[in-house]
Amino acid sequence: MSKAFVRESDQPNDDDEDMTLPPLPPGSKNYMTPGGYARLASEYRWLLDRERPEITAIVSWAAGNGDRSENGDYIYGKKRLREIDRRLRFLSRRLDSAEVVDPAAPRDNSHHIFFGATVCFANQTGEEKTVSIVGMDEIDPFKGYISWISPVARAFLSAQEGDTVTLRTPGGVEELDILSVSYRAIPMEPFVPPSSPRGKRENRQG
Image (cartoon, rainbow, N blue to C red; front, side, top):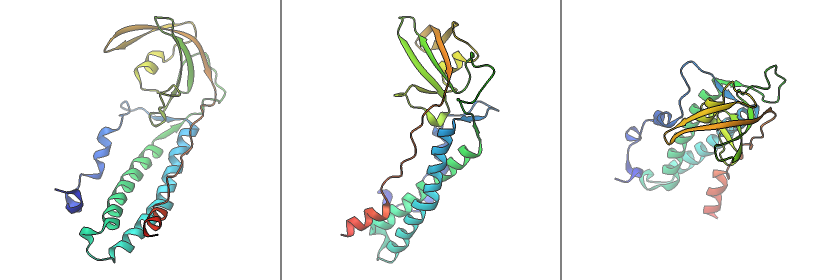
């Protein structure tokens, strides 16, 4: 059956998205860098103050244009509102539970590896890599940003320059040599709003 003709009450529960989220360790905090927090907060404000009102206006406009079951703007708008509300709830929970830690802030234990550390290490083949330990919502493999609950970050926890740590993976055990540990600002890409839904509708009408 086409989803366009399914009653709203038959749609999947909005909270189903939570089942795919990476879980926090029991009792732990949701650590996040200032840049990561700012990005989530910007997305939250944009969804709440800009996109949701625009989509609501589109739905109201489309509702007066005949049979709703064949009204593409109405069907899309209602679906998008559900997605926005689900995302807003997710962002609200993430922001409410956030423990913001600035990697660049002065610290007494700067030689040991904790959240926010940038670590250069070598694997058993001598290949050198650099990773920065960030929050779960800040992961970027292309930049070497890894979650603080990832296996690599957990293996590094509390270690320091010159240590060798053991990384256990499904593929076996690997020894990693820590070459350097530093704490500095970790750049985060800002939230970039997509094109305005109102603009898209006006383009279609034109």
